[in-house]
View 1: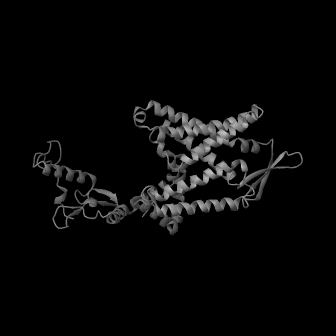
View 2: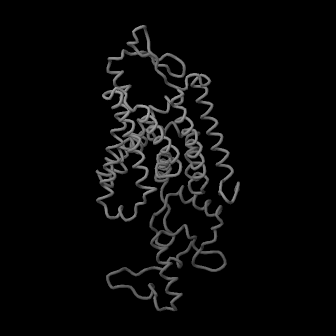
Length: 374
């Protein structure tokens, strides 16, 4: 169902994205006590965040509308709503730690790549964890006492403790974004160095998809650090100009979040559900190929693929006999499928290429998968 052909917008993801944005707006209004605690200086960040929420939600809902993605998504939701969730919670916690926080799946590719990605991810997560509650008015700080030597923390309108301005807590609270900025800059520099030294990446990378996000992240981090430098060592010189530049770079980053490579930040948690799905399939067992007898596909994946093929009107691929019988394409392993491709090429070439006629002396005879019984 299309809303318009020109924009190619899908109606259901569009409605769901609008509802998600309205829900976030309601949470902002509720947490900021009707907007009373919203900081006017952060209004531009708030509007850009709401736009980013709409764009990210629309793209995410469009993504899970795809038949294959929807298959994994529904299975994850069923697991979370069933009794299996209690048994799956420990594994989900470990997978979240491994896949999202430690990100060891990148470590397997190279240590340099993992270091760059980890610094970027941890810096961005730390930055968003601090700035979003401040922008939404969920957290605020007020000075306490006549001498203003203590800060009072408010969480959703309720007092959440206070701390003296010369304490370690105050130092960490006021400089946690500086730490996040340093981590992001280090991660971006490592990424750029690695990309410059990798001929494969250098040949295939695009500025808008691969380099622009890194440039924006560096710009956001550098302007944020300059704000601290202006306040600490320059007596506030050019603070207004630097604040405008920082806000501009953050807004550009948020506006590009739904459309660029940074969208995988939102997609990555879905890998936890996919891993649970694969583990359940391995526990159930693998189905054997009907051509060679080799176990090759998880049982739950095979069932879902059969249903998916029916949904896509692909449930007609059978080999071996006429009239709809024979071996289904999904019941053959990749090796047997390659044999079928070779056999079809031999038929089209009128016997000039027949892999089933002769084989090298060092190879085993190649059976014809279509000769096997279903």
